[in-house]
Image (cartoon, rainbow, N blue to C red; front, side, top):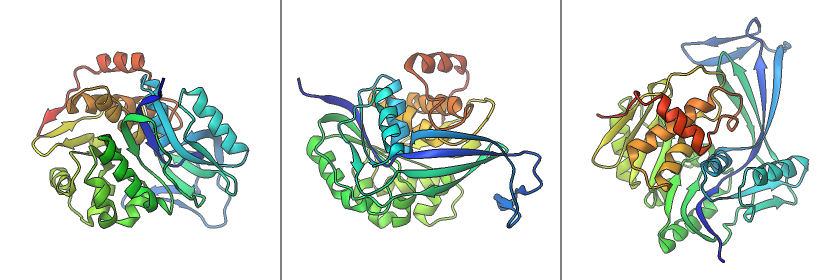
Length: 326
């Protein structure tokens, strides 16, 4: 019997170290105007807690989340040939992710991120190994999710486009830091074959080289590039989606916030998983929002990712918080 997947996720995987900075520390402050986290140069900064989370990253988070939502999931990622890489591999297998497309880089180490937590916000220091990406020959799949890769990612853009066109696969695209740096011209060909394009407001402005504050105008500009559905998340202001005809607005679900890392990925996970499961855009926005609501209540990008039963219960709890057409 041939393998078939609901979704295959493509992207880098990392180990995250979360450093909780002492709330009472006089060595750091948040400048509200410029949104800067500041430290006194050459001083020691007190840390009250360190948490290690293995096997995270945009694509990895979606793979874990999709698997928990009972989707048949695989992941193409390259891991370092070290103890951390093996730890990540074991984590993915434990989460029920098919390991056929997980590759070990014999010459490289594992990607690492250090997340500085202060007053429920985070600043992330990122280290990415250079990878030599080659798209594997995938088994049949309904969807592909394409997200954060490091330098050299552009070499698999055309293979991804060919895969989507040849097999009539639906593509979810959430560009990462290195992909956004390449700019709209480089990303346009892959955006033209994208079913659901997801990013936050600041990323949308950066990609469009625009200071536009009107979400609806940003949605329209991105939609004109080619994606069938464009989604922009805007932190506490919720999320917005546009399919070329209708613009939807979804408020956040009010909940205590412990740490925001993974909020965007968990939204993407819920949104894409809902579409893969045959749901419409309004339902997908609720799935994404409730998943993000759960994730921000815990440390790390995956601890709060919901199972299908947990998602149903939380959706019922927040049934009065509905999206609307704007």
